Each structure stands twice: as C-alpha cells, then as structure tokens.
Amino acid sequence: MGARGVSVVEMDEPTMPELKILPDTRSVAHVAADAIVSAAESAIAARGHFTIALSGGNTPENLYRLLATEQYRAQIDWANTYIFWGDERCVPPDHRDSSYRMAREALLDHVPLPAGNIFRMRGEDEPHSAAEAYEQGLRDFFTRREADVLVQPRFDLILLGMGDDGHTASLFPNTDAVDERSRWVIAHYVPRVEMWRISLTAPAINAARQIMFLVTGAGKADTLREVLTGPHRPRQLPAQLVQPVDGRLIWLVDQAAAARLPDGMQRAADA
Ligand code: 6PG
Image (cartoon, rainbow, N blue to C red; front, side, top):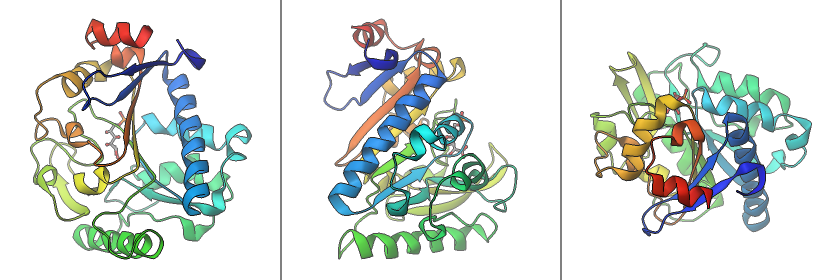
C-alpha cells in the first residue's frame, strides 16, 4: 500500500490502464488533486500552459473544492492554466444542473484564474450551434498553441466520470454519439436523462496526454467490473471507448467501486 493507502495495479495486459484503488472518496480526491498539480507543473514547464477538461457530476465536486483550498490552490500556476469541459448539460450557466456552475462555485470563483482562461460550453445556446462553436474554439486555441495542423485537440489532462450505465462525458449507451469519429464535439438529446447534452467525442478524448477516471461508490461496482474486465462493447459501455492514442489512462477508484473487480486485480492492487 503506497502513500494515502494508494494501491497501484499495473495491468499485465498492455491494453489495460493503470488502476489505483483507494480507501474512500476523500483519498480519491487527494490523489487526483496531487496528479493535477503534477500534470500542471510538467505541462507548463514543457509548453508554457496546462489544459484540463473538467467533468460534471457529483464525484469531482469534492476534488474541485479540495483544489480551491490553500494547500492546493498555491501549487498551481493558474495564470497559465486553461479550463475546458468534457461535456455539459444544455442549460443556462447558473442552472442547478450546469457542470460549469458546479465547477465555478466549487473551484473557479476561489482561485486566481483569468476569466479568459475559462472555456465553457454554452449550454444556454441552441445545442448544435453551441457544439460547433465549442469545436471551433478548440481549433483556434490548440492551433495557436500546439501545432500548425491539428488532427485532434491534445488536452494535457481530461477528467472523466462513469455512470452506472457505463456512460462517460455525455457519451451514453446506444446513442450515435458513441460512434462519432470525425467531429470533436457533438450535441444530442439523451432520452435516459431527458435532456440535451454537449460532449467531447471519443477521438477528442483519446488524443489527450492524460485521462483520469474518478469512480466511487458501490453503485458503480458492477459496471466498473464490466468495463475493465468484460467483453469490449463500447456501444453498450461507452467508458470502454476511452483508450488514449498516445497518452496515459488512470482509473482512480475507491474500494466500494472496486469491490466487484476480480480477486486478482484486488490482490495485485494490495500487493
Ligand atoms: C455529467 C458527467 C457524467 C458523470 C457521470 C458520473 O455531466 O454528469 O459528465 O459523465 O461523470 O454521470 O457522475 P457522478 O460522478 O455523479 O456519479
């Protein structure tokens, strides 16, 4: 067991990601915050800026609040940090369901981040035009800073959650969004949640330098086992789409979410 009770499972199959099983949601947040500090330091040292795409949902809120504490706030160069989102609900930015609102209240209002460093998805606009505008914004940003010719935006870090149905970002099971391979950002109506969503697509996600899943709670245990060890069926389990082309994939999970993983994984994690 490493620091903070972190146990690392380096999967023997080359295609399996790095899995860290932590005691509880608090330790997941701390390990994630440390990883974000480290990713920011190395990105800014290497390229002068750090680009991170945030996730919505309940799991990351503790992480965002932790990053806003003095212990962590002082460790990040916010002036050279650029905030994006992996997905958004199509609601106004002050709506209770807005992922932007949650991140703003938990983190962005409490750190010295220039307003121009925040690139939110405009949930208040017509969804398809908002998705097109966001994609154009990514092209403008990453072309200026990363490369002359862009195939995909290459985020330094993308945070993702996973629903108990295996969705990630707003790529939901059995929706055409799962199959999108040319656009970077799409908008679609999601019957399961009865709302329009905007989301990065699999190619935009998989171009990242680092992707970090945060999955906690017993309610995710069966799905996590299916996603990590079951047959590859990304249309039913969109989290399986996440396979960075040239980047690092880390799963940060608590013991409750890991409870249904095969004993071998648990033993390897506890080794
Ligand atoms: C969202 C997220 C979504 C989330 C999962 C898990 O906007 O809801 O992008 O993909 O990460 O639904 O959500 P919880 O962390 O609340 O379980």
